[in-house]
Length: 265
Image (cartoon, rainbow, N blue to C red; front, top):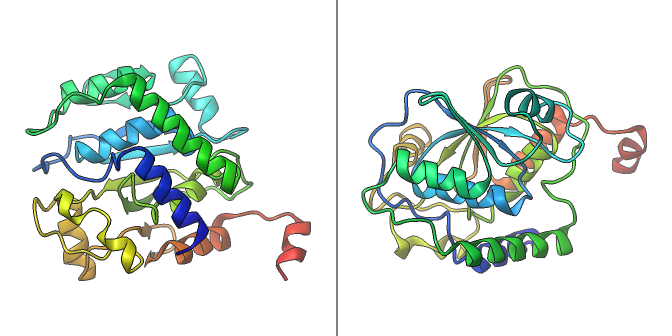
């Protein structure tokens, strides 16, 4: 197993694999996509993304890494400050800062048949911080610091779920490159499926129970249920496998310095 996959797996284990299983599959998504101004490496943003997976909600991610130049100023212009996570729901006209307030709002506005209230808050905050510290200590600033990049004319689409250790490097790179993307949450349908995919690499499990809209879509369009899966309408590319996706994003959107380009040759 790759080092980053192992570390991300440990980070998800620290969080008790929250953001893995859909509480109750949603029959339809809200009329308008939720928008989340997000920093991948932020522990408070992670709490919100976990709940979005469990509530089976898609969301437009607007990445705001440190020193980001695309969406940080936009968030401040709309909400008055650069603080993340920041949620906008055009379905209700709601704008919210702060993980606790956002999680309460999502739980009340888009309830799941089987969803309970968010877990004990002090424990949630502590374990999420610990998971983020582990990743930063071993892997550096993954998902936190901006990388120079080309803009994408249209948002990308990513089929993933929060706790997947294979999806994390892709989301981290999308954040670093400040590439907006529609996160098609594709959580598992049952707890018995948790962990089995790590034995064979990428998550390649058919949706056996509680199949979701997005897992059904993956099976229908690709013949399998596997995450991460990236669709880029800007180039017509669609691909599986986290390493391949990260390489594609770097090749297509990263603006390397002359020193970096020489070092890569």
